[in-house]
Length: 620
Image (cartoon, rainbow, N blue to C red; front, side, top):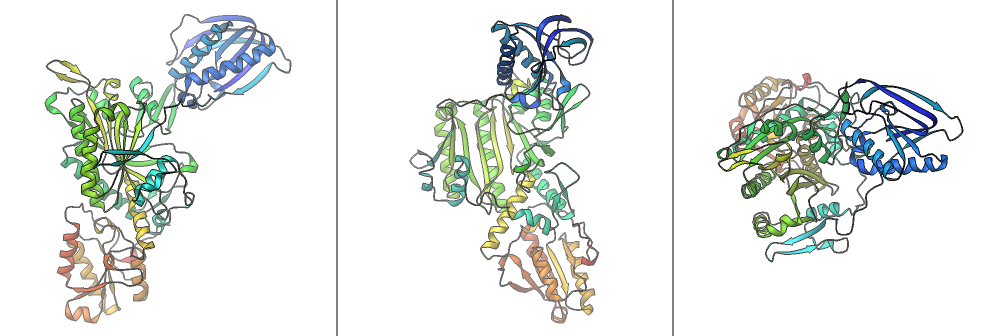
């Protein structure tokens, strides 16, 4: 909040014209003599704690009023003090709270109406304390004892839960789960400030880079990176459609004048892009909730439709992260979020769906060959009531993956959910990359007036939020960080073959082998394999090194022997180490069959780059 305080002989105002955001009031004119005029602009940051900022404003007004020995106070809304204003609803609430608190303290208060064009006259007294400006920030609310979450390690066999703290955290033997637990408990590691390797990889591999002409945390994607994002989007699309979801598309921008949208936006803890267009306050979405909830509100939902799943690849979602927090593809301001919402008739159906979706989320780790670590989060009431159900899931997870899980218990509900699971990949520096999630939302249906029509009447359903992979960018981040770990262990780093932009590079030994090598590359492309042909004027050894730097899974070198025998010499990256490449002899048909088998059941898109390496442009 910004505030300008003027000790005045008098202030007189008259409201002349109503705007679209004007409050309804009969108090359209007024005058107060011998007063402290308080011109106030309520700002966006005040929306986090409007009651607290009103109290702090009153404390400052009272302090100045006591110095000046005045009892008459004018509360005057004045938007021109700031360019980062709150919503009209928040501003009106704060101004009314200031008025009421001052009146309770015995001051004579005149409040000018909000949202009206007003004429006013003021006579400033002109002494050293007659004009003062203040920046008001709400005091940080202290958590009462017992309000903090507690974290536990589970023993699914005995159903014992051990509370975790800094002293006993090393009882966790799984290194990745230990890293996740340390992050949750706020235990800092010595590598916290290092730049993760994927930041270097995304530039080296021509995947993407920061767009300097945009806001920080926004990326430009080059052809290889765009191809990878599209393939991952296809993968999630196929996954959710097989789960019974119906893809939709909704806007990226919403009007905060809509009460339900504002309340849901204010519930979200992350920072948001908000801005004004005329008299309207708008926001860029941070997930697909808004559009999907508005769509569900307008549907005539019947029990037989449920569980009903809508899915959107939220391209794009926006979160205004602090600049110092932006880290490559791990934390950015503009990202692509696969977002599925499931309408469930009741909590029983929601828990059944939660369990199914949890296993589908884990399947994405299997498919992508990523190692996941799991943390469940429940309110105490929900956990106490459904403890057996939770331990059943934890026991099945332990049996299948051989891993424990962490449990967070919240003393009471402070979010829209009563339970959720967060699944993370641990990067090469031992820090979690949050990926899939499933959440049980018990609040949004009522807020958005989403109803199911039953024989007994209308009911508000339970809604599940699910991102089966987490954001597309973080999936790539996890894959690149996994490759960095492989390189640390001496293995040749690579991406899954189905996701590698170039799956095969064909290298001729000499010019006389060019035509044959080109035909091999062309036949690979005809069989839906992304191949190119290195016709550049470099030595064979340099061409092989370049293919290695690009992590190409299969490198085919063609010389006299290969042309005569029809057997290709193929370097297989998956079986190679950084010091020793692994080579096999195989026919072209055998290579095609091998790659087809390796990429079966995964999406395919053709390579958009020219087949000849000499014609492929560099993007940075």
